[in-house]
Each structure stands twice: as C-alpha cells, then as structure tokens.
Image (cartoon, rainbow, N blue to C red):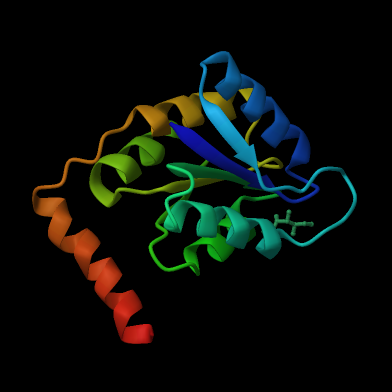
Length: 148
Ligand code: RB5
C-alpha cells in the first residue's frame, strides 16, 4: 500500500503527523508537498495527489488544507478521483464501502490530531462493497466521460 500525501501551508503540520502515523504502521507514503508553512495554493497539491492516484502511482491519497474542502475539490477535478472530505469516521467508512473513494481530505482547522488519525484508520480499513453500489460508481465515471 502506497499513500500519496499532500497539503497546503495550513495543513502541513497535520499532514506530517499523518505521515508519521502511516510509517508507524509500515505504510509507504509519497509526499507531494507543500514542504513548509510558507503560504501557497491548495489546488497544486490536490491536483498532484489526484494525478498520482489516477495514474496508479499511488493506491490512495490523503490531503489536508484548512477545511479539507478546497484541496478535495481540486483532487475531484482529476478524472478517476473520488475524493471525500471528512470530519468524522462514519462518512469516511461509508465513502469507502459505497463510493469507493480513493482520496480522503480533511481540514486542519476542523479536526484535531486524534480525530484525524481515527478518520484515516477508519477510511483505510473500509473495503469497497461493489454490488448495488457498482452501477452508481460507474455512473460517476460516465459523468466524467460526458465532460471530456
Ligand atoms: C487557506 O487559507 C485556506 O483557504 C485553505 O487551507 C483551505 O481551507 C481551502 O479550502
């Protein structure tokens, strides 16, 4: 399992804590930036992580900005990405089971460290159920095809 990580300046510290947490579980990560607290723009990192996951270079992605919203929106602009912005574990789990989400975004100004790690663990533990959900996930891909 290889996880792509990305954040803007607001999400930098939480991203690094998540990186440590994943490494402690022997999960490999690739950090697509940013690398400091210097002000930057979240779309850069949402796109980079989205591309890495869409191309299969990484299995899943985790993104952090102030709210998790902007960086998640950026990732969702990449074809093949189903990013969920979460501040609680229930949606994180169901987003894996029903929507086969491949990117998780969270807000460093929204969740504390313990809650963020719980959401990460819950999201990673969730298995896509397919079945009745497969048709709907395919419909999401069909929307992308109509746009291109
Ligand atoms: C940066 O101030 C902030 O807008 C960004 O981190 C994020 O919350 C955007 O969605």
